[in-house]
Structure formats: structure tokens, C-alpha cells
Image (tube, rainbow, N blue to C red):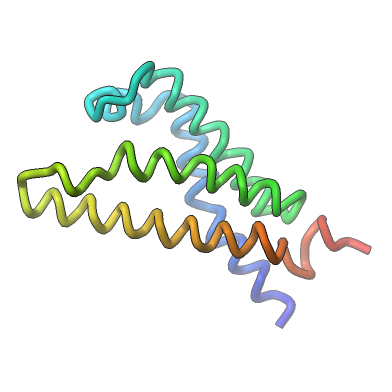
Amino acid sequence: MKIVPLLGRILFALIFVMSGINHVGGAGADYAAASGVPAANIMVRLAGLLALVGGLSVLLGYKAKIGAWLVVIFLVPVTFAMHKFWGIPDPMAAQMQMAMFMKNVALIGAALLIAYFGAGPLSIDNKS
């Protein structure tokens, strides 16, 4: 069952690696600006760097506890800045943003578990 933490890390990290690459390239900056994020072009790229580095760290199991904290640092402000479902008048749009908000809360929980327990046996961190 040593493979279970590895599979979990891969599945968890993919969203951060993929979105990190996109954000470092500036994708989403217009949406962030429209959501009121100051200096959106810079902030999106910095957030993307956090997501990418944290995601790669967790994926590889190299300094995964630190990488998981980078993911938390990425997710907390993004969750509250970009998924403000409580301020959206359209019920369908509010429901979608609430789902995204709760998804991010769950990802924060998973990142905290990795930050506490580490990468698991099949990782660079645990290479003997």
C-alpha cells in the first residue's frame, strides 16, 4: 500500500502544477482584475509561482511539507478573493462560486495533511 500516498500526491498536485503554469504565463489576470485584485497581472503571476513550486514539491515528494505550506499560502487568499459566492446576486453563479470555494477549502485541508504527515514512503524526502 506504499503506492497510495504517491497516487494521492500525484492527483493532488496536478491542479497546482497545471494552474501554476497558466498563471505564471498571466492567464486569469483579467478575471482577477475584474474581481478587484490589485496589481492583478503581477499578483496572478506570483500566485502561479507559489502554486507551481508548491505543486512540484508535493508531486515529487521533495521538501513536500514546505511545498504543502506554499499551496496553503496560495489557496487561502485566492479562495477568498476569487470565489466570493456570498456577494453574487445570480443564484446559479453564486452556487458555482460556492462549489469552487468549498473545493478550495477541501484542498487546503489536504495540503495541511501533507504539511503534517509528509510525502509518504515513495518520495525523495524518504529516500534512504
